[in-house]
Image (tube, rainbow, N blue to C red):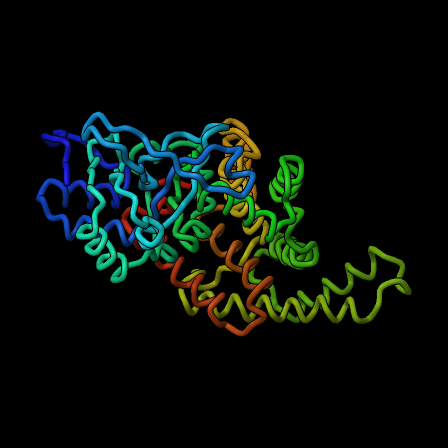
Length: 390
């Protein structure tokens, strides 16, 4: 193996992954180095035309550090800014080892960075790599990850990205990485195609615009919450659920010709109010809402997802960074207009997600939200603690 010479003094690693790899390299602890490789995702550059054709041909490069041909793999924190070409494919160390075959070219990890390391491929090293790859695998979901170099930590863009923090923790994404490669070019295109039927830049723009305008959440959800908000303003206090149901039904009937409002629609609105009050009671019990507080709006679920849709657009090459940044800033502005605090925003996002997925089962969809809320309200690196709401 080749560690390319002296260590760089004063280098700040972009993420914890590069920090641990660098520390292992400095110590000469190659077992720890390979354990870390096995526990994170690795990226390799691919020509865009190859990727769009469904191929992931990985071209070797000749390294002046070793004088050998190498296959380069990078960890997420040191990836270059997304460009139209090349794009990046995400893999695991286990997959790299499994597909290596009898190729004698070297393995290069993060070449061109202070943490770079090179390893010859031969039967002995491949056997060693397999041992590490079998013991660990990337498990990033449910964790708060921060890009300490190259990602905004304060300011308007950071605030916008923090509006997507719940989904970032859910996915194990770097919360403040706008110039994002995500799960890789092909994987991100497949994600937005499967989840949103997005198959081009125009599709992506349409979905993003709908999210930024709050048109993806149910109008009925927002209607009943707005009724309660207006009642609270008029009466200056907590709103009795029975009065809330009666008022919502009255408004629904008075805004439409009475004979055109099916009883089932009125009943559905009243049942929804019951669901919301039960979720809020559980939110208070589990710390998502302070005692006496209610959810103001579920638009946070759209705004938080819009932040990620902007990032996914970059990863899928459906937009450039300036367009993504404008979307993130707009999501932040809309959130500030609607909510009063991170708690207020977080509860709105949580209720939207629960109403869509959980069906009052209080199962994994719900318990995961509670865990994410705990992380974002207690972890010292959380943007909800480091980025002021106002």
